[in-house]
Length: 385
Image (cartoon, rainbow, N blue to C red):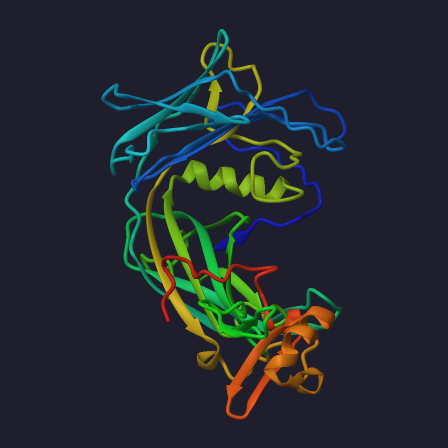
């Protein structure tokens, strides 16, 4: 089972058994509560810890803690110190990476108060075997009807681990209908662009909580785990698309904590979003467990995989929406090079076509030739064609 964190009604959750005391929120009136969120894995660092206070539902205040001392301690007593970065964010050294089958605990000292997490075992994550897409229909994001899209799934290899969390990053290629290829100087010289303004790339990162378990499964692997849905109403799958999925092998306690956040959250995938209901974490005050604190320290092994997809390889039922800007051939201007500067200076746009015999240029509007005003025309370092 995999669940997505989404905007939901305030739910009351009674809490689960834990040696960390659950804190019950009053959604209309609650005190300022300390929130601590941190994760480490066996990949290269650095890793961050976020320390803040929760805030009432009718405010946007987010009070960060900037004077804490933060460190991790492993089962051998070795300490890894965090450095303060900004706005409640603390960071480990870049060289630090967790070790599989080692226990780690998080320590946070604020003035005379110290908060300690329960020890977390860093478990090895299984290899992601494949990422693949299937055509599905879901409720439209722009009207009351259903629309199609591609649901991306992952399958992973066999494992004795049972609980997992997922993150994704994606990028896609944008090609305008009339990619700009040349520019014109005041003396009417036509010069080829080194890099077209009409081919761009955009990147997105997951901001939803995706978690799952193979409990109650008849196989010892994670299969058909939905990690990302891309609607045909977007432009992401128009030409070429890539997604990288990270799979974290988390503890049962972490899984149950994320499940609580999912069931109680109103607005997103972070502990710093508006919360209501009882939330159980694995962090407590060192000497006074009655002091309320919410949050979780996660230690998890991680594996990752990247795959690329072309529009032509998608399910034939996938019906890509039109380019978001109105671009018709009849709107193009075809003229001689000597007039190009006048037309572009007067009406705007870019040259997308240039011929020396016969001498002529094609000019189209900015939106139909140039995507750099909303995306980057330098491909990401990992991009493959």
